[in-house]
Image (cartoon, rainbow, N blue to C red; front, side, top):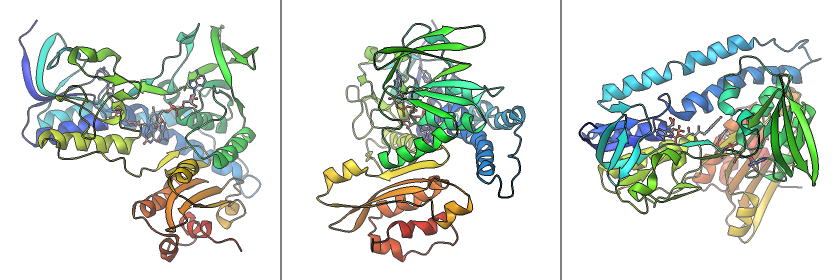
Amino acid sequence: MEETTHYDVFVIGTGIAGQTAAEICVNNKMTVAIADNRAFGGTCALRGCDPKKILLQFTDLVHKSQLLMKHGISKPPKIKWKDVQKFKSSFTDSVPLSTEKKLADLGIDYYHQSPVFQNENQVLIEGKLISADTFVIATGMIPRELKFEGSEYLEISDDILNLKKLPKKVTFIGSGYVGMEFACMLATMGCKVTMIEQGVKPLSQFDDFLVQKLVAHLETIGITFIFNAEVVSIEKLKKNVKVHYKLQGKDQLLKSRKVYNTAGRVPSIEMLNLPKADIKSDKSGVLVNDFLQSTSNPNIFACGDVSSKSLPLTPLSGLQGYIVGNNIVKANSKKFDVPCVPSTVFTNPKLSTVGYSEEEAQKRFKNVKIYKGDGSGWYNAKKENNPVYAYKILVNERTNVIVGAHLLSSQANETINIFSMAIQQKMTVLEFKKQMFTYPSYSSDLKSMLKEEE
Ligand SMILES: Cc1cc2nc3c(=O)[nH]c(=O)nc-3n(C[C@H](O)[C@H](O)[C@H](O)COP(=O)(O)OP(=O)(O)OC[C@H]3O[C@@H](n4cnc5c(N)ncnc54)[C@H](O)[C@@H]3O)c2cc1C
Ligand SMILES: NC(=O)c1ccc[n+]([C@@H]2O[C@H](COP(=O)([O-])OP(=O)(O)OC[C@H]3O[C@@H](n4cnc5c(N)ncnc54)[C@H](O)[C@@H]3O)[C@@H](O)[C@H]2O)c1
């Protein structure tokens, strides 16, 4: 074994969290190295948000045209999937090399393997023993492994993003963010989709009133939902895959071309040998305090999806990387307070949320005013011939301050940001209504959502 190399900071993971922390440290004259066991660049840029949205913009076009059939559109656009994939790859292909170049230009050393902790301040990587004053764990999440006979035939979201040809019939196991977004994408392109979900509904973190409307709409475009179901095994046929599952105690089966595991994601910590460095973790990830420092080893920080204090969303991972970088440079100078963070499920229509859910608001405030309704009869939805548009806004009745917003519309991913600002600024309904928005726009509808009933 080669002799030990020492760094001030060794970062594990080249996603937004790891890169952000590494950059802050190196810019503050520390010696820094970074490691990744996959192509450099992280989930968002290579296997998540960014490539997904490139594919979705094409299916969005098809969806929009489908709604306007018989109103001037005679045929939805024909999508050449091969070209779509080429376009997507023109974004993703360059990420690993440009990331390596950026890191090298900053003076950061890099390694292409998973490091394995040997003790509290050493890892073994690429056959080298590396020591560091501080380690940053920013390894993100990976798909949860499902354990039943034939689970090796399951595919994951990476495979959907790289589909060469659109399949005619697919099954998803799990209907969370990942499952619902890709199910909607494939169904829009004419694929018959079945969602097998162990729970009683999809997207359990989202508002029930809106989720029910979304499900009802997705059923009309060819998605079948099976709830309270347990997958028992998978059988590989010549071209297809057979899913055996149990529903209300009865054995059922379903044949499709592909079966996707979209049953959630777990922290990527298995390969690191964390106990060797006295790093405590559980199913939420590496256990950290408010400074994002390991609760059991002060030389370790964790940020992004893998930290126990994160929600797996890109903006939060970036923020946590920033906090960790700063806390390494200036000992524990920044605390992580969970911010008001909006989030969107990119289905058609989009489902967005920010602030408290109805249940949380009811627990927190004595009286909650609920502005809830259906906007499908409003001009914006009608001009798109879009049958689904709904909202639920929550207000603390005592102060009249907006505390939660939940939107289902073709523009919800944008308009939710307005409510996000309002909630962060602790705006009252009256103050919100004083704002001027462009017309016609989905933003201009937001004030109508807060109309008092006559
Ligand atoms: C399909 C999909 C769509 C998504 N869409 C959205 C979206 O629209 N909006 C949104 O906000 N979020 C979205 N997310 C979530 C978002 O991608 C993550 O929250 C974000 O990328 C996390 O950043 P991170 O830096 O914490 O981790 P990651 O970006 O996952 O980076 C972790 C890095 O660590 C590496 N690594 C893992 N284990 C090891 C190891 N043992 N040794 C060395 N390296 C290791 C990985 O290869 C990876 O490069 C999506 C996720 C998926 C899967
Ligand atoms: N648009 C976005 O911002 C976006 C998109 C994708 C992912 N993400 C992030 O990634 C995280 C993970 O998303 P996800 O969709 O992988 O997970 P998830 O936790 O959102 O959903 C997983 C679903 O699978 C179900 N499930 C679990 N085990 C099952 C089983 N054995 N059989 C049937 N169903 C089963 C769960 O009940 C749940 O409904 C999200 O929490 C989100 O923060 C965000």
